Image (cartoon, rainbow, N blue to C red; front, side, top):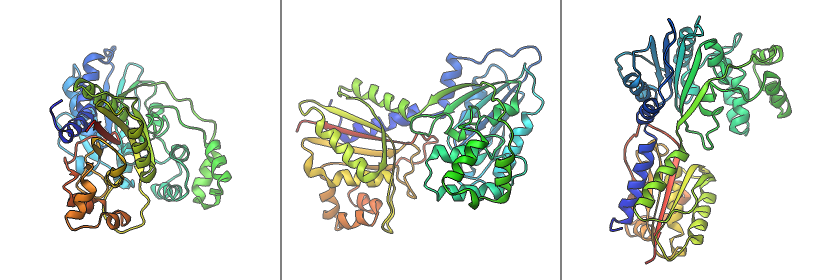
Length: 421
């Protein structure tokens, strides 16, 4: 264990990112669990949707035993790339627009008139919900945008918002499977959702919906939101008939925050670190998350090297005008409490997509000296923290983690390495 704590933390962070590599995950799965052979004159259609659509499609095309009849990748403009053997189009994220609607229409067109001998391979990653949209009959993209704006301001949790969104869509909540019927559907899924609820990833195009139109209407009425809806949406939810049964798809999780935590654990143990229980639900406000991290550190054994590994996605309460992100602020808050943590330690918090907030950093890596080093550089760490200016604070102490875009996203990971002084 001669490697520095700083370098070990960065190695474990890279390990988490590598495990979430979308292309590697697709290749590994298809190599060990190939798709069933096509029957008769059956065709194979491959549709990839999400921010990782291009690398996932590239890996599938290179791994499948024969070229698919049709291959479509739907991604965001920043990740668009030419791909031999596939059509690549873009939608908008995080707010869908007409390009998203065109992408949804293109996907639905490919799923028309399939037979039981046909096979659909879906490659799903985060962002798919906005990149590919298809409003339910009678609704427009403007209607859906108005509902989405209302939901984001409503305080409803993500599952209840998705219940409503799914009932306004032809694709969400199993809609893709219904459109593809009677063809067989297999979905390889890279999760950006803590807890890996498949119904929430890209709003669950290949899984059962969260509820019916009647459930959505009752929720909106109970929350006092019904009369804020466009008239067309009220009519749609009131007149929707019985829910159509969703054909069963084979849904396979090939990458997630939990998988990345397990990869970090295996590497840390190979390097000689003791790893207590993985903490896979570090969510909520960064202030509370920092308290939780420090509590775990205080309760860990003091007589041996320990690696505390966390995963999740925190939130920041913005009260200032500074620049930063949830991972940078979490790291800075842990640095603030350095006096209360004995031993030699480092703490890293980073986004697996390589981007934290509106900055070029993935997060921060702090030590017992970081808070003092910010002050020594002529900055006021307390004032910067109060202004949500974690980027400037960490930059002053050379404590930013900057690795560039990674091409994947399985939320955030945190690493606290601690050994006796």
